[in-house]
Image (cartoon, rainbow, N blue to C red):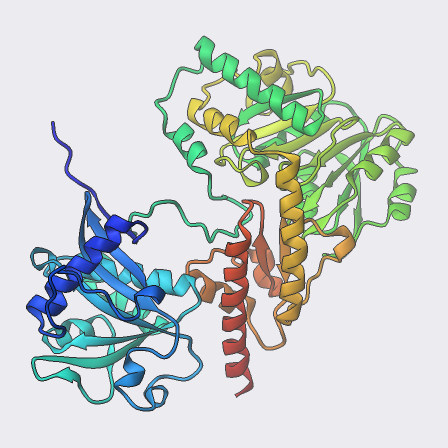
Length: 544
C-alpha cells in the first residue's frame, strides 16, 4: 500500500529547495503577477537573496509554498514608503515578510495560514515581534482576517498593486485564538523538537533517544530486556560511583518516597536540611512517613553553613540519618555533597541525598551515601517516567511493613523488575547515558558561567552566588518593575520555554533558565538577545 507524502514546514536548507523556491517565485511574480521581466532560466532570484531566510512548505519532495524573512534594514518597503518607521508601532523589532507564494491548488487550503504561522514562529524565535509585509490587493480580506493592519499608500504597479501592512506578535496571537482557520492548524511538523527548551524538565531528547523510545516494545520478562536493564543499572552506578541502583517505574518523587519508607524501618532520629523548595519537600515527605527528625532551615538562596550542620549533627545519635538536596533546583544552589557525606560518616550517621537535578550535569559521587534518588529525565536527558534509587547496602523485602511499590528490598530482590516495566523508557535511558560524559558537564559549566555574566549585564539579580551555583539552573530576579511571569509569557510566545509558572517561582517573582538539556552557545545567544529585548520593552512600559 502506498504512503501519502507528508506536508512539512521548514527552512529551505539545500540547493534543490532553493532552486524550487526560485522557480515558484518565477511562476508567481513573473508569469502570474507581472512584477518582473521573464528570463530563459525561468527562475527569479531576489535582490536580497543573500540575506533572505526562506520558509517553505513541502509535500513529499515538492516545494508548494514559500515566504522570505529578512530582518536587515533597509527593507524592500523602505525604498517604497518614505519614513517607513512613522507608520509602525514603536518599541518592536520588525522583520520583513516577502515573496509569499503558494501553488494554485493549495491557495484556498490551510497551507497558506500554516506557512505564515511557521514563518512567524521562526521570526519570533529570532527576537522579532513585528511583521511587515506588502500584501497583494487580491488577498486583502484574508490578510485582515489574520490580524494584519494596512498602512500607507499602495505600492507596486497598476498591474501588481500591493498594500503595506504590519502585524504585531500580540495581535497575531490574539487573532489565532479566535480564528478557526488558524486554530485548526496543528503545530507545524519540524525537523526536530523545540531547540529553545530551557526547562528543568522535560528536556528535548536527542534524535537517537527519540528513536529508542519509538522502537517496538518488548516484554519486561524477556532475556533481552533483563540484560538491557542490567546494563543500564551498571552504567548508572559507574556514573554516580554507587554500589547499586534500582530502576522503578514512576517519577522522581517516588524515589524520595522509597527513601522515606526505608528510613521508617529503623527507629532512629534524623536531620533534614532545607534551603529551598525541594528541601522543604523532603521535610514534608519525612512528616508523611512519620519519621523522627529535626530540621535545619536556611533562607531560600542561602548556602548551607557547615558549622551549623555540624552542630545539628551532634544531636543526632549514631545510626541516625541526614537527608538533603544536592542541587536545590528552586534557587540554583548546589549544596556541598561530599562535605556533608564526610560529616555524616564521622558521626556514624547515614547520608541520604536527593540528586534528581544534579545527576548527569555535575559530578555526583555517591560513595558512602546510604540512599540517593534521581530520575531518567532532567540531567540524564532521557524521558521522565523512571525513578532511580541508589543504595550502598543490600535491602531486604519488608512485605509486612511496606507497600510493594515503596519497598526497596522488593525491587532489589527482583533486579528492578517485580512489576511491569517499560522497555521503551529503559531503551531511551540506555541511549541517553552514552552522552553523559565529563566533556558534557564541562561544557554546561562553561556555558553557565558565560550566561550568568550576560544576565547580570541585562540587569537581572542572581540569587545563587557564583561559588555555590549549580551550572544546570540559573535563577533570575528581573529588574525593578518587570514581571518575571510576564517575561516568561513573552518568551513562551517566541518559542522559548523557561520555568516561571511553578507556585514557588510565582510567589517570589523569579524566572529560571535551565541548561540541563545542554543547549548550544548559538541557542543561548539567541535567548540572551530576545530576553534583552523583552526586558527593555517591559521596563519602558513600566516607566512610562
